[in-house]
Image (tube, rainbow, N blue to C red; front, side):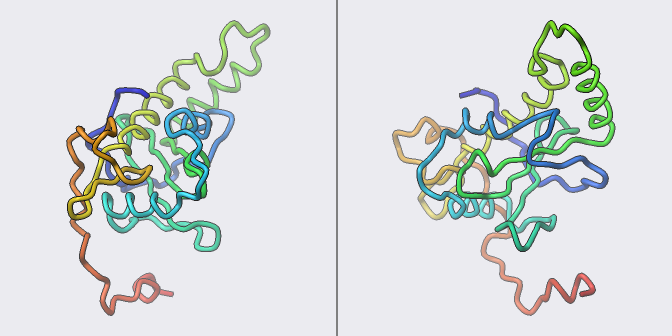
Length: 194
């Protein structure tokens, strides 16, 4: 596991015109997530949602109401890269990523030039743009091991953090200030103008 962490991880606020996807020719977070989180046998959508909601509160961006439980777009140490969390049965398929329009243009141009190079002397994973995105995504993924508490029980993105877990000794993340606040009569659909 990578030792990097991203202590100031939060929900990304402005994503206008960002390129956001599950995976593409530039980067595939699924293979990285398999390395970081493994492949649990059980459906882990519920525990992922529990952790994301407790730590980050209500999502500030919408999501596909038919196909998805919820989506969170989280910051990384690189302000032009975000980690997309879309809980699904296995952790590796729950990740996507997004990049700022300027970085997207640069990355698309670089990947195309790399693909057109013959012979290739380096794999795409060795390219500086890939490495930049990868460092940011891995740091954010690893930060999701940071425990958040519900009463006196600690949870990470993978579930309950036991006393013998390597993450039990990490400083705990603050839980969301939205914890405990209901929406009352607030109608989200009406507020959005139907």
